[in-house]
Length: 276
Image (cartoon, rainbow, N blue to C red; front, side, top):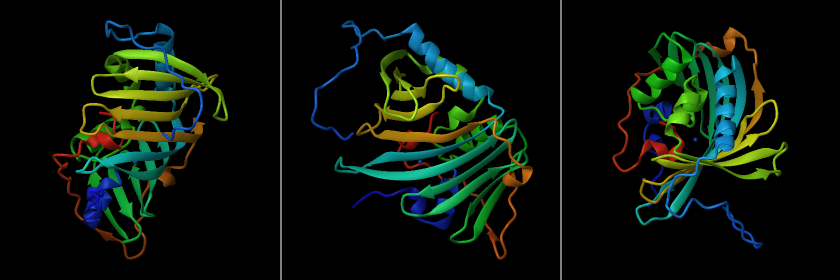
């Protein structure tokens, strides 16, 4: 039996999880420069500078909009990989505003809003919402969602002001794979390693060094599942009206209790792209 997402089991499960989303062709084989035979990490100063420039650029942004289309592996008991996907439209304004619209690969939709005072999740198909009071900054809200509410938020760390320092601390190896030309803009393809993951990023060259694609392999998890995401329609410094972050319950909407889920023992949160 295919092991599907835990949040399909109940409507509460979905509402909570809303917070949470290589084909080889014939041709000449290519490989990036290998690590030294000694196994020592590869630390290319120029590549690390590109990585941290990207992280700092996002961390300094007063606001942004981006669409993220992601896929992640669910490793079955027999070892088979099953892929699920999501699309998220993110609107963020520092210091304390966030709106996320989510559409899953099975058509389910939901939204998450943080207005500096509370976190609200909404499932329109059932016209239900849950709200938790949380006064603070966007950074504090994201940490609270992940640490205390056990919410699944793909690439959450990318949207905090601590992203550059965290990335620099965790990255044990950084190297430039190639200058990549198949996006709408030229990008630098980087390979990054940490104790927990192998990560690849394709970062746009130029005045806005934004990630266009991310691939994360959870090398210590059973089956080494991957998270893959394309990031597009970036708008840095995007302005937004306060109303875009305020939740007004639709007619007949039912408010339900917010219960933090207990993560399955055999399913690490990292398997869907959450950067902890």
